[in-house]
Amino acid sequence: MQLIRTISDLRTALKAERSRGKSIGFVPTMGYLHIGHLTLVKNSQQHCDVSVVSIFVNPTQFAPNEDLAQYPRDLPRDLKLLEEQGCDYVFAPDVNEMYPDGSGKTSTYVDAGELSSILMGALRPHHFRGVATVVSKLFNIVQPDKAFFGEKDYQQLAVIKRMVTDLNQPVDVVGVPTVREPDGLACSSRNSLLSAQDRAAAVILPQAMQLAQTLVDQGERSIAALHQAVVDKLQQESRGEIEAVDICDAETLAETAEQLTAAAVLLLTVRFGKTRLIDQHVLRF
Ligand code: AMP
Image 1 (cartoon, rainbow, N blue to C red):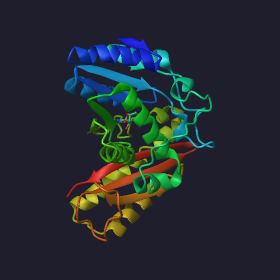
Image 2: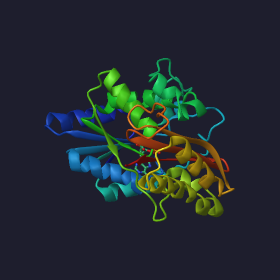
Image 3: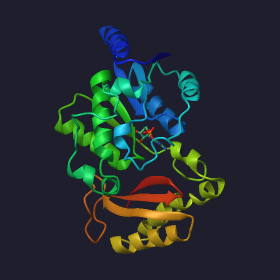
């Protein structure tokens, strides 16, 4: 495995791989890796000859009041995990390499429009613009054949798919199902920021999603009833503060009709202390 710090070194290495006819799979991350990230890498290894993982905590997707400084980081540990996983290249640039004027900002942004401003985009106004911009930059640097993203960050995956379509970027974007802890909580780098009590309490998220699916299995089709049941369940846990509960169209993320008619996705955002947890479940019926 090679650790690469600069854009020019990565371009040189990947140009050589491409000239040997190798296909390139790419997994963008912010590091502090867990089994969810490693599952994306496994998917890349199954589908592509060479796998590249980037580790970059991207300043342009954090608002000034958000947890950029607190975001957990441990590059030596990440490298060990990726080495064990058999990853080929790790690209870990510093902020100045990605945003050379030193400010952690750029003049040109990629904005996915409506999809960026609804749901989580309403809570975090510049977040998806920052994500789309850095992923675009990374796509230009890596030029992958396929890129792998978690369904856990459901709206992010939708934004990236839309961006690739709208900008004709020659990358096949692959969504990978959410990997969970044994109690059902989605693996997340942010779980490490939870106190022991909050970590235990956070199991309410998968429980609320499971309840919604059970109600659908029993024939419930009213969006309002499902929404209320999820809110009531989440409120049983006083440590969590509900930020958003949405049931929307799984493809477009538009608001659903009053009755569940097409595949819909349940999106949850719940804060424990300063830590915001998100999760998603596509309701099947
Ligand atoms: P992050 O480092 O949090 O920016 O995540 C990097 C990538 O890993 C994103 O595509 C995430 O959606 C994906 N990811 C994060 N958590 C999980 C998980 N529990 N299961 C599958 N993919 C995940």
